[in-house]
Image: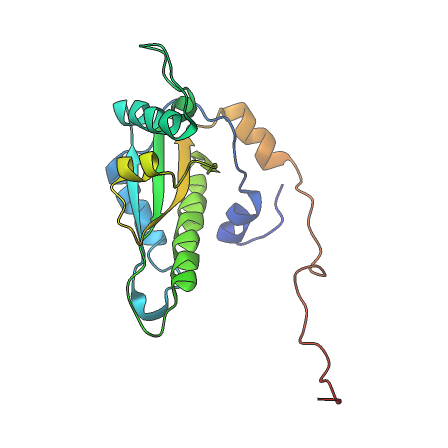
Length: 196
């Protein structure tokens, strides 16, 4: 179903978070190409206050161990935490604020979140399914240590990336998505208070 004649707006309107993705994932080279669509994110003073870490293969098992440590879970040898194996590729999104007198940390966190969402859109447009996952343990000491975070950094979660079944993609592309009206989101300043 086409809602927009512009293919970029159409891709944005059709994006979905997929809780279950299939096997396969973009290579680091493909990710590098997609980053060209991410780096123009709104970024006050061009600080680039974010970075991405890819977790593939055994790195996902290491994440499972860290998540278990954060939750106080002990598993039998060979019994891995299955959560990080929901996708062949996880991309850790790290907010990495820089000291700057004109750019507060919250604004830099917003830039990092913007970069992650642009990457989601770019991956979706390239044909990949994505789910941004977080959780209560995302910034626990064990998980932070695994990702090599500095004290000032914040792990904003992981993009779980994988293939999308062709039939599911066709159903998504054909399914009309409820269009939300602008009223809850778009407004104007309140009237000027004459008693002030």
